[in-house]
Length: 192
Image (cartoon, rainbow, N blue to C red):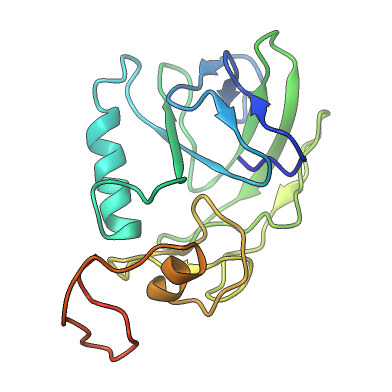
């Protein structure tokens, strides 16, 4: 979820639902404000949130090469009965604390290992929801290959870059933590 506005958005009490379009709303947790120009990543967990830390660590390791996400990357969760995004097509609806739809999008079947690119900012308050069908491409709208080389997307960010994970790190002000390990000779250490 990206805040394209010029001021931070307080999302305390906001909720999410899938293609049931508001029949079962589940609270978003872990992120209460999205700064202007920033994005937040939300993943599905269990209702109690007891799995949140391990899912966040696994996600961060897969995408960013460390169990701790880079500074400034906002990651939250949701979980409960009646919601579950389908790779065969579904929708994401976001509701404010009063239960009013803030935005929503739909999507068709998706392939494993590729996320959808919504740099166009599609979303609607009303049904039918606009459909996102553009897949993420390395080097376009912040798309890069994950640290584990299994996925392509732009989690938590939409920027132009060269498409490599080290380039994404450099473009976002992060430096390598390793020393003298540069197997691909890109000038950045393999150790993140």
